[in-house]
Length: 398
Ligand SMILES: Cc1cc2nc3c(=O)[nH]c(=O)nc-3n(C[C@H](O)[C@H](O)[C@H](O)COP(=O)(O)OP(=O)(O)OC[C@H]3O[C@@H](n4cnc5c(N)ncnc54)[C@H](O)[C@@H]3O)c2cc1C
Image (cartoon, rainbow, N blue to C red; front, side):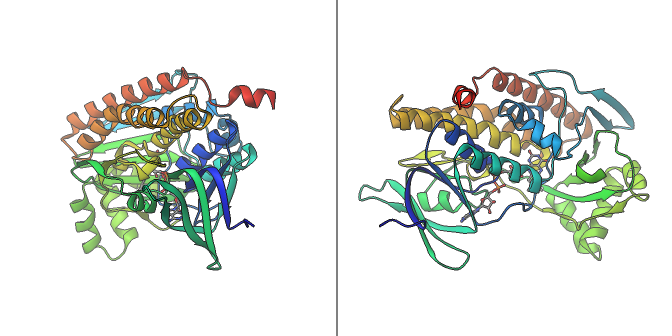
Protein backbone atom coordinates (compact mmCIF):
# COMPACT_ATOMS: atom_id res chain seq x y z
CA UNK A 1 0.00 0.00 0.00
CA UNK A 2 1.25 3.48 -0.84
CA UNK A 3 1.71 5.90 2.05
CA UNK A 4 1.90 9.70 2.26
CA UNK A 5 5.67 9.42 1.99
CA UNK A 6 5.43 7.31 -1.17
CA UNK A 7 2.95 8.46 -3.80
CA UNK A 8 2.59 9.10 -7.53
CA UNK A 9 1.45 12.28 -9.25
CA UNK A 10 1.22 13.97 -12.62
CA UNK A 11 3.89 16.47 -11.61
CA UNK A 12 6.35 16.65 -8.72
CA UNK A 13 7.81 20.13 -8.16
CA UNK A 14 10.87 20.75 -6.01
CA UNK A 15 10.93 24.29 -4.57
CA UNK A 16 7.80 26.16 -3.50
CA UNK A 17 8.71 29.82 -3.87
CA UNK A 18 7.96 32.16 -6.76
CA UNK A 19 8.82 29.68 -9.55
CA UNK A 20 7.66 26.41 -8.01
CA UNK A 21 4.51 27.60 -6.25
CA UNK A 22 3.37 29.55 -9.33
CA UNK A 23 3.90 26.51 -11.58
CA UNK A 24 2.04 24.29 -9.09
CA UNK A 25 -0.83 26.75 -8.81
CA UNK A 26 -1.29 27.00 -12.58
CA UNK A 27 -1.03 23.23 -13.16
CA UNK A 28 -3.51 22.56 -10.36
CA UNK A 29 -5.88 25.16 -11.82
CA UNK A 30 -5.59 23.28 -15.11
CA UNK A 31 -6.81 20.17 -13.31
CA UNK A 32 -3.57 18.23 -12.79
CA UNK A 33 -2.42 16.27 -9.78
CA UNK A 34 0.57 18.22 -8.46
CA UNK A 35 2.74 17.86 -5.39
CA UNK A 36 5.19 20.65 -4.55
CA UNK A 37 7.82 20.15 -1.86
CA UNK A 38 10.24 22.52 -0.18
CA UNK A 39 12.83 22.04 2.50
CA UNK A 40 11.75 25.39 3.97
CA UNK A 41 8.54 26.14 5.86
CA UNK A 42 6.36 29.15 5.11
CA UNK A 43 6.25 31.98 5.91
CA UNK A 44 10.02 32.28 5.64
CA UNK A 45 12.41 34.67 3.97
CA UNK A 46 15.04 34.05 1.33
CA UNK A 47 18.05 36.14 0.32
CA UNK A 48 16.50 38.55 -2.16
CA UNK A 49 15.28 42.08 -2.52
CA UNK A 50 11.80 42.03 -3.97
CA UNK A 51 10.96 44.88 -6.34
CA UNK A 52 8.56 43.33 -8.82
CA UNK A 53 8.74 44.83 -12.31
CA UNK A 54 5.62 45.62 -14.36
CA UNK A 55 6.02 42.26 -16.15
CA UNK A 56 5.73 40.44 -12.82
CA UNK A 57 2.88 42.62 -11.57
CA UNK A 58 0.97 41.78 -14.75
CA UNK A 59 1.28 38.09 -13.87
CA UNK A 60 0.09 38.67 -10.29
CA UNK A 61 -2.92 40.58 -11.62
CA UNK A 62 -3.80 37.98 -14.27
CA UNK A 63 -3.56 35.16 -11.74
CA UNK A 64 -5.78 36.98 -9.22
CA UNK A 65 -2.94 37.50 -6.74
CA UNK A 66 -2.32 41.25 -6.97
CA UNK A 67 -5.15 42.12 -4.57
CA UNK A 68 -3.93 39.64 -1.92
CA UNK A 69 -0.42 41.12 -2.25
CA UNK A 70 -1.72 44.69 -1.84
CA UNK A 71 -4.07 43.58 0.96
CA UNK A 72 -1.04 42.16 2.79
CA UNK A 73 0.11 45.75 3.30
CA UNK A 74 2.70 45.96 0.53
CA UNK A 75 2.32 49.57 -0.62
CA UNK A 76 1.29 50.23 -4.22
CA UNK A 77 4.28 52.08 -5.69
CA UNK A 78 3.08 54.67 -8.17
CA UNK A 79 6.17 56.79 -8.73
CA UNK A 80 9.83 56.19 -9.48
CA UNK A 81 12.58 58.77 -9.01
CA UNK A 82 15.77 58.27 -10.97
CA UNK A 83 18.87 60.04 -9.63
CA UNK A 84 21.93 60.22 -11.91
CA UNK A 85 24.68 62.72 -12.67
CA UNK A 86 23.40 65.24 -10.11
CA UNK A 87 19.88 65.29 -11.60
CA UNK A 88 16.68 63.72 -10.30
CA UNK A 89 13.68 62.85 -12.47
CA UNK A 90 10.40 61.65 -10.93
CA UNK A 91 7.91 59.78 -13.10
CA UNK A 92 4.44 58.49 -12.32
CA UNK A 93 4.05 54.86 -13.33
CA UNK A 94 1.88 54.91 -16.42
CA UNK A 95 -1.10 52.67 -17.03
CA UNK A 96 0.22 50.02 -19.40
CA UNK A 97 -0.54 46.33 -19.83
CA UNK A 98 -3.43 46.90 -17.42
CA UNK A 99 -1.28 47.87 -14.45
CA UNK A 100 -0.38 51.31 -13.10
CA UNK A 101 1.81 50.36 -10.16
CA UNK A 102 4.69 48.21 -9.07
CA UNK A 103 5.09 46.56 -5.71
CA UNK A 104 7.84 45.20 -3.45
CA UNK A 105 6.30 42.67 -1.04
CA UNK A 106 8.59 40.95 1.45
CA UNK A 107 9.41 37.45 0.22
CA UNK A 108 8.06 35.81 3.34
CA UNK A 109 4.70 37.38 2.44
CA UNK A 110 4.79 36.95 -1.35
CA UNK A 111 5.99 33.36 -1.37
CA UNK A 112 3.41 32.39 1.26
CA UNK A 113 0.59 33.98 -0.76
CA UNK A 114 1.56 32.01 -3.88
CA UNK A 115 2.07 28.71 -2.01
CA UNK A 116 -1.34 29.18 -0.36
CA UNK A 117 -2.91 29.86 -3.78
CA UNK A 118 -1.33 26.65 -5.07
CA UNK A 119 -2.85 24.76 -2.13
CA UNK A 120 -6.27 26.34 -2.71
CA UNK A 121 -6.10 25.30 -6.36
CA UNK A 122 -5.62 21.68 -5.25
CA UNK A 123 -1.84 21.24 -5.25
CA UNK A 124 -0.42 19.20 -2.40
CA UNK A 125 2.10 21.60 -0.79
CA UNK A 126 4.53 19.80 1.50
CA UNK A 127 7.12 21.74 3.48
CA UNK A 128 10.08 20.46 5.46
CA UNK A 129 10.92 17.99 2.68
CA UNK A 130 14.51 17.90 1.40
CA UNK A 131 15.03 16.32 -2.00
CA UNK A 132 18.34 14.49 -2.36
CA UNK A 133 18.07 13.14 -5.90
CA UNK A 134 15.91 12.08 -8.83
CA UNK A 135 14.71 8.57 -9.68
CA UNK A 136 15.06 7.19 -13.20
CA UNK A 137 13.62 4.28 -15.09
CA UNK A 138 15.66 1.76 -17.06
CA UNK A 139 15.84 4.10 -20.08
CA UNK A 140 17.19 6.98 -18.01
CA UNK A 141 13.95 8.94 -17.92
CA UNK A 142 13.40 10.89 -14.70
CA UNK A 143 10.39 9.37 -12.94
CA UNK A 144 10.38 10.90 -9.47
CA UNK A 145 12.39 12.21 -6.55
CA UNK A 146 13.62 10.84 -3.31
CA UNK A 147 14.47 12.66 -0.11
CA UNK A 148 13.49 12.89 3.50
CA UNK A 149 11.38 14.90 5.90
CA UNK A 150 12.66 16.82 8.92
CA UNK A 151 12.47 13.74 11.11
CA UNK A 152 14.65 11.88 8.60
CA UNK A 153 11.84 9.66 7.28
CA UNK A 154 12.33 8.68 3.63
CA UNK A 155 10.15 10.38 1.00
CA UNK A 156 9.65 8.83 -2.42
CA UNK A 157 7.46 10.70 -4.90
CA UNK A 158 6.83 9.52 -8.44
CA UNK A 159 5.63 11.75 -11.26
CA UNK A 160 5.22 11.84 -15.01
CA UNK A 161 7.26 15.03 -14.76
CA UNK A 162 9.71 16.30 -12.14
CA UNK A 163 10.23 20.06 -12.05
CA UNK A 164 13.29 21.68 -10.53
CA UNK A 165 12.22 25.03 -9.07
CA UNK A 166 14.89 24.71 -6.43
CA UNK A 167 16.93 27.80 -7.12
CA UNK A 168 20.48 28.54 -8.24
CA UNK A 169 22.10 25.44 -6.68
CA UNK A 170 19.30 23.21 -8.00
CA UNK A 171 19.67 19.60 -6.88
CA UNK A 172 17.22 18.58 -9.61
CA UNK A 173 19.35 20.26 -12.31
CA UNK A 174 22.47 18.49 -11.07
CA UNK A 175 20.80 15.10 -10.62
CA UNK A 176 19.08 15.29 -14.01
CA UNK A 177 22.35 16.36 -15.64
CA UNK A 178 21.04 19.68 -17.02
CA UNK A 179 23.83 21.27 -19.03
CA UNK A 180 24.74 24.92 -18.60
CA UNK A 181 24.19 26.24 -22.10
CA UNK A 182 25.24 29.87 -21.67
CA UNK A 183 27.72 31.37 -19.25
CA UNK A 184 28.39 35.08 -19.27
CA UNK A 185 30.94 36.87 -17.09
CA UNK A 186 29.89 36.69 -13.46
CA UNK A 187 27.95 39.66 -12.20
CA UNK A 188 28.38 41.78 -9.16
CA UNK A 189 27.41 42.13 -5.54
CA UNK A 190 23.90 42.96 -4.34
CA UNK A 191 23.46 43.83 -0.67
CA UNK A 192 20.49 45.17 1.24
CA UNK A 193 18.95 46.02 4.59
CA UNK A 194 15.60 47.33 5.85
CA UNK A 195 15.04 50.79 7.30
CA UNK A 196 12.06 52.42 9.05
CA UNK A 197 11.16 55.71 10.65
CA UNK A 198 11.20 58.11 7.69
CA UNK A 199 8.71 58.59 4.81
CA UNK A 200 9.41 56.93 1.43
CA UNK A 201 8.32 58.75 -1.73
CA UNK A 202 7.89 55.74 -4.02
CA UNK A 203 10.72 53.77 -5.54
CA UNK A 204 14.07 55.51 -5.99
CA UNK A 205 17.07 54.48 -8.08
CA UNK A 206 20.52 56.06 -7.73
CA UNK A 207 23.17 55.64 -10.43
CA UNK A 208 26.80 56.50 -9.69
CA UNK A 209 30.14 55.35 -11.09
CA UNK A 210 30.31 51.57 -10.61
CA UNK A 211 27.27 51.42 -8.35
CA UNK A 212 23.49 51.32 -8.38
CA UNK A 213 21.35 51.80 -5.29
CA UNK A 214 17.62 51.45 -4.77
CA UNK A 215 14.83 52.23 -2.31
CA UNK A 216 11.88 49.79 -2.40
CA UNK A 217 9.04 50.69 0.00
CA UNK A 218 7.57 47.58 1.58
CA UNK A 219 5.42 46.43 4.52
CA UNK A 220 5.08 48.13 7.91
CA UNK A 221 6.45 51.51 6.81
CA UNK A 222 9.83 49.97 6.02
CA UNK A 223 11.91 50.19 2.86
CA UNK A 224 14.40 47.75 1.47
CA UNK A 225 17.59 49.68 0.70
CA UNK A 226 19.82 47.89 -1.81
CA UNK A 227 23.28 48.61 -3.21
CA UNK A 228 24.68 46.81 -6.25
CA UNK A 229 28.37 47.16 -7.12
CA UNK A 230 31.09 45.19 -8.88
CA UNK A 231 32.23 42.35 -6.59
CA UNK A 232 35.76 43.70 -6.09
CA UNK A 233 34.37 47.01 -4.75
CA UNK A 234 32.08 45.22 -2.29
CA UNK A 235 34.80 42.85 -1.14
CA UNK A 236 37.41 45.61 -0.70
CA UNK A 237 35.06 47.63 1.51
CA UNK A 238 34.12 44.49 3.49
CA UNK A 239 37.79 43.73 4.16
CA UNK A 240 38.42 47.26 5.48
CA UNK A 241 35.24 47.72 7.51
CA UNK A 242 34.65 46.38 11.00
CA UNK A 243 31.31 44.81 10.10
CA UNK A 244 28.95 44.11 7.19
CA UNK A 245 26.77 46.97 8.37
CA UNK A 246 29.69 49.42 8.40
CA UNK A 247 30.72 48.25 4.92
CA UNK A 248 27.15 48.68 3.67
CA UNK A 249 27.01 52.22 5.10
CA UNK A 250 30.29 53.07 3.37
CA UNK A 251 29.09 51.72 0.00
CA UNK A 252 25.82 53.60 0.36
CA UNK A 253 27.57 56.88 1.23
CA UNK A 254 29.64 56.47 -1.91
CA UNK A 255 26.81 55.34 -4.19
CA UNK A 256 23.99 57.59 -3.00
CA UNK A 257 25.24 60.24 -0.56
CA UNK A 258 21.88 62.05 -0.36
CA UNK A 259 20.14 58.77 0.51
CA UNK A 260 22.82 57.91 3.09
CA UNK A 261 22.22 61.33 4.68
CA UNK A 262 18.44 60.72 4.82
CA UNK A 263 19.00 57.30 6.37
CA UNK A 264 20.86 58.95 9.27
CA UNK A 265 17.35 59.86 10.52
CA UNK A 266 15.99 56.35 9.95
CA UNK A 267 16.37 53.13 11.93
CA UNK A 268 17.92 50.01 10.41
CA UNK A 269 15.63 47.11 11.27
CA UNK A 270 17.59 44.16 9.86
CA UNK A 271 21.12 42.93 9.38
CA UNK A 272 22.74 43.44 5.98
CA UNK A 273 22.28 40.49 3.61
CA UNK A 274 22.99 39.72 -0.02
CA UNK A 275 25.44 38.08 -2.38
CA UNK A 276 28.95 39.27 -3.17
CA UNK A 277 29.12 37.63 -6.60
CA UNK A 278 26.32 36.37 -8.80
CA UNK A 279 26.59 34.16 -11.87
CA UNK A 280 24.94 34.92 -15.20
CA UNK A 281 23.97 31.59 -16.70
CA UNK A 282 21.30 29.63 -18.56
CA UNK A 283 20.74 25.91 -18.15
CA UNK A 284 19.09 23.47 -20.53
CA UNK A 285 15.43 23.74 -19.50
CA UNK A 286 14.07 20.26 -20.28
CA UNK A 287 14.96 16.60 -20.63
CA UNK A 288 13.17 13.24 -20.53
CA UNK A 289 10.70 13.51 -17.65
CA UNK A 290 12.09 16.76 -16.21
CA UNK A 291 12.14 20.52 -16.59
CA UNK A 292 13.62 23.50 -14.76
CA UNK A 293 11.94 26.80 -13.94
CA UNK A 294 13.05 29.96 -12.14
CA UNK A 295 16.62 30.41 -10.92
CA UNK A 296 17.23 26.68 -11.29
CA UNK A 297 17.19 27.15 -15.05
CA UNK A 298 18.23 30.77 -15.55
CA UNK A 299 20.15 32.99 -13.21
CA UNK A 300 20.98 36.62 -13.75
CA UNK A 301 22.58 39.38 -11.70
CA UNK A 302 20.04 41.10 -9.44
CA UNK A 303 20.97 44.53 -10.85
CA UNK A 304 17.89 44.41 -13.11
CA UNK A 305 15.61 43.12 -10.31
CA UNK A 306 13.85 40.83 -12.76
CA UNK A 307 14.26 37.34 -11.25
CA UNK A 308 10.79 37.15 -9.72
CA UNK A 309 9.21 38.35 -12.96
CA UNK A 310 11.27 35.82 -14.96
CA UNK A 311 10.08 33.07 -12.61
CA UNK A 312 6.41 34.08 -13.03
CA UNK A 313 6.71 34.25 -16.82
CA UNK A 314 8.45 30.89 -17.16
CA UNK A 315 6.12 29.21 -14.65
CA UNK A 316 3.26 30.02 -17.00
CA UNK A 317 5.11 28.87 -20.13
CA UNK A 318 5.99 25.61 -18.38
CA UNK A 319 2.52 24.97 -16.92
CA UNK A 320 0.91 25.44 -20.33
CA UNK A 321 3.49 23.13 -21.98
CA UNK A 322 3.03 20.41 -19.35
CA UNK A 323 -0.74 20.74 -19.61
CA UNK A 324 -0.42 20.05 -23.35
CA UNK A 325 1.77 17.01 -22.73
CA UNK A 326 -0.40 15.64 -19.90
CA UNK A 327 -3.70 16.13 -21.69
CA UNK A 328 -2.45 14.70 -24.98
CA UNK A 329 -2.86 18.06 -26.73
CA UNK A 330 0.73 17.81 -27.97
CA UNK A 331 3.51 15.25 -28.11
CA UNK A 332 5.69 15.49 -25.03
CA UNK A 333 8.80 16.28 -27.07
CA UNK A 334 6.98 19.10 -28.90
CA UNK A 335 5.52 20.57 -25.70
CA UNK A 336 8.83 20.53 -23.82
CA UNK A 337 10.78 21.89 -26.78
CA UNK A 338 8.20 24.68 -27.05
CA UNK A 339 8.80 25.59 -23.37
CA UNK A 340 12.57 25.64 -23.85
CA UNK A 341 12.24 27.80 -26.96
CA UNK A 342 9.72 30.22 -25.42
CA UNK A 343 11.85 30.65 -22.28
CA UNK A 344 15.08 31.17 -24.20
CA UNK A 345 13.52 33.70 -26.52
CA UNK A 346 11.74 35.58 -23.74
CA UNK A 347 14.81 35.88 -21.53
CA UNK A 348 17.24 36.95 -24.25
CA UNK A 349 16.83 40.75 -24.31
CA UNK A 350 16.77 41.37 -20.56
CA UNK A 351 19.60 38.86 -20.00
CA UNK A 352 21.74 40.82 -22.46
CA UNK A 353 20.90 44.14 -20.75
CA UNK A 354 21.56 42.57 -17.34
CA UNK A 355 25.01 41.33 -18.37
CA UNK A 356 25.91 44.78 -19.71
CA UNK A 357 24.63 46.56 -16.59
CA UNK A 358 26.49 44.07 -14.39
CA UNK A 359 29.72 45.21 -16.04
CA UNK A 360 29.05 48.71 -14.60
CA UNK A 361 29.81 50.88 -17.64
CA UNK A 362 30.20 54.67 -17.12
CA UNK A 363 27.07 56.49 -15.86
CA UNK A 364 25.72 57.71 -19.26
CA UNK A 365 25.92 54.18 -20.71
CA UNK A 366 24.43 52.68 -17.53
CA UNK A 367 21.55 55.15 -17.70
CA UNK A 368 21.00 54.35 -21.39
CA UNK A 369 20.81 50.63 -20.53
CA UNK A 370 18.25 51.40 -17.80
CA UNK A 371 16.07 53.05 -20.46
CA UNK A 372 16.43 49.96 -22.67
CA UNK A 373 15.50 47.80 -19.69
CA UNK A 374 12.38 49.79 -19.04
CA UNK A 375 11.29 49.43 -22.70
CA UNK A 376 12.06 45.68 -22.67
CA UNK A 377 10.02 45.20 -19.50
CA UNK A 378 7.07 47.12 -20.98
CA UNK A 379 7.25 44.96 -24.12
CA UNK A 380 7.27 41.78 -22.04
CA UNK A 381 4.43 43.02 -19.84
CA UNK A 382 2.29 43.74 -22.91
CA UNK A 383 2.98 40.28 -24.36
CA UNK A 384 2.05 38.58 -21.08
CA UNK A 385 -1.09 40.68 -20.66
CA UNK A 386 -2.27 39.54 -24.10
CA UNK A 387 -2.08 35.81 -23.26
CA UNK A 388 -5.09 33.73 -22.19
CA UNK A 389 -4.96 33.06 -18.44
CA UNK A 390 -4.25 29.34 -17.76
CA UNK A 391 -7.15 27.69 -15.97
CA UNK A 392 -9.30 30.84 -16.02
CA UNK A 393 -12.35 29.10 -17.53
CA UNK A 394 -12.02 26.19 -15.09
CA UNK A 395 -11.86 28.67 -12.23
CA UNK A 396 -14.94 30.50 -13.49
CA UNK A 397 -17.02 27.30 -13.50
CA UNK A 398 -15.61 25.93 -10.23
C1 LIG B 1 20.55 39.83 -3.42
C2 LIG B 1 19.44 39.52 -4.38
C3 LIG B 1 18.52 40.50 -4.69
C4 LIG B 1 17.47 40.22 -5.58
N1 LIG B 1 16.57 41.20 -5.86
C5 LIG B 1 15.52 40.95 -6.70
C6 LIG B 1 14.51 41.94 -6.93
O1 LIG B 1 14.53 43.05 -6.38
N2 LIG B 1 13.52 41.63 -7.80
C7 LIG B 1 13.44 40.41 -8.44
O2 LIG B 1 12.52 40.21 -9.23
N3 LIG B 1 14.37 39.46 -8.21
C8 LIG B 1 15.40 39.69 -7.35
N4 LIG B 1 16.33 38.72 -7.10
C9 LIG B 1 16.19 37.42 -7.80
C10 LIG B 1 15.14 36.56 -7.11
O3 LIG B 1 15.40 36.46 -5.74
C11 LIG B 1 15.16 35.15 -7.72
O4 LIG B 1 15.16 35.23 -9.12
C12 LIG B 1 13.96 34.33 -7.24
O5 LIG B 1 14.03 34.13 -5.85
C13 LIG B 1 13.93 32.97 -7.94
O6 LIG B 1 12.88 32.22 -7.39
P1 LIG B 1 12.88 30.63 -7.46
O7 LIG B 1 11.53 30.22 -6.96
O8 LIG B 1 13.35 30.20 -8.79
O9 LIG B 1 14.02 30.16 -6.46
P2 LIG B 1 14.26 30.42 -4.87
O10 LIG B 1 13.58 31.69 -4.43
O11 LIG B 1 15.72 30.31 -4.72
O12 LIG B 1 13.50 29.21 -4.19
C14 LIG B 1 13.99 27.91 -4.29
C15 LIG B 1 13.32 27.07 -3.22
O13 LIG B 1 13.76 25.72 -3.41
C16 LIG B 1 13.97 25.13 -2.15
N5 LIG B 1 14.95 24.06 -2.31
C17 LIG B 1 16.23 24.14 -2.76
N6 LIG B 1 16.81 22.95 -2.77
C18 LIG B 1 15.90 22.07 -2.31
C19 LIG B 1 15.93 20.67 -2.07
N7 LIG B 1 17.01 19.94 -2.35
N8 LIG B 1 14.83 20.08 -1.56
C20 LIG B 1 13.71 20.81 -1.26
N9 LIG B 1 13.63 22.15 -1.48
C21 LIG B 1 14.71 22.77 -2.00
C22 LIG B 1 14.50 26.26 -1.28
O14 LIG B 1 14.24 25.96 0.10
C23 LIG B 1 13.71 27.45 -1.79
O15 LIG B 1 12.56 27.68 -1.01
C24 LIG B 1 17.38 38.96 -6.21
C25 LIG B 1 18.32 37.96 -5.90
C26 LIG B 1 19.33 38.24 -4.98
C27 LIG B 1 20.31 37.15 -4.64
